[in-house]
Amino acid sequence: MTTPAHPSFLQEFFRFGPHAGAHRVAARAGVSVFVPLTLLTVTGHLDWSAFAAFGAFTSLYGRAAPHAERTALQVTIAGVLVMAVTLGCAVGLLPHHQWWLIAAGALVAAAASLLSDAFRWHPPGPLFVVFAFTVCATLPAAASNVAVGFFVSAASAAFSVLIGRVGLLRETGERRWIPLPRARIREAWQAEGTRVHLARFVIAVGAAGVVGKLIGTQYGGSHPYWAMVAAVAGLSGATHRARMIRGGQRFVGTLFGVLAAAAILPWHPQGFAAVLVIAALQVGAELLVGRNYALALLCITPLALMMGQIVHEVPVGPLLVDRAVETLIGCGVALVVLLVVRDPAH
Image (cartoon, rainbow, N blue to C red; front, side):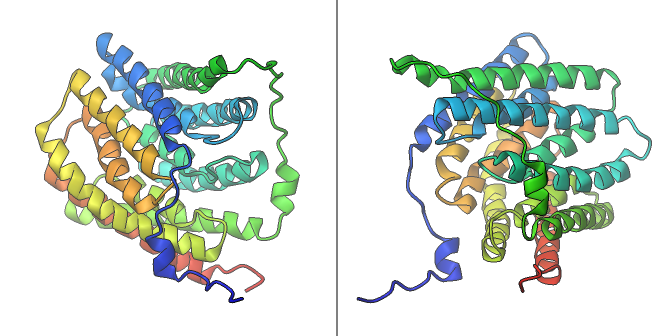
């Protein structure tokens, strides 16, 4: 009997995983983002769409978990996402806020990574938390954003938790009490390799933000936080190999995602049409993200750019260039940090 060969780096990079009920997650995610954005469109507050979208990220957690466990997990991540939105809005009010964003974003990445391990988030890692914080910190400064961001994201997150419970209508068994998961902060902190990996997040996210801002200034770019988010993606994964694969998928997938965005953004969808496009892209992302991260970025990249365009529309060409360059910076910085800051076992 022969032992199956360990898959190569390229085989894992291009691996297309099983469907694993992704349509149910995609449906929940689509509804969770469609309904809040539709309400904001009808009421004339689409400029609050980022707050609603980040609250709706709650629906992405606990993909395959039983209902009670999913609800408990989503309640905890909802609280963290709302805190990230609120903190980001507050940082956006500071003078020279882009530098404060970089410093605080590096710490948020490390803190959210520790919470992810302590609460055993699925999907794991601080990506969505850092994304929420950095985007909200770069919105046009307004003191009202702090309160509005808190309440809109909290309402959207609560709706996502409710949507996650809809499947219970099909079940006739006894309803279980939902105990919130215990935060195993000390266990997570003391786990082997944790502190080294937290240091990687602080170094890589901070460095990516600084490099992204300095280089972006040279060609008129204005999204250094994209480099920070890309650095987080490049550090996500359970092993050194998995992180390198994820970073490579982030960059390659973003390049093709930029091409997809180039086919969508020039049409300038607005209002309800924009909401439909965003919801469709959210569904597509969730159908693919569990199968191959690079393919999912064909939807994730135009989705992220669409969210920015409906709040503050800018010329499409420079926007696409900025996305590609900042992603390259973030993935490159993450790769360097992975190679330099090694686990003690190595």
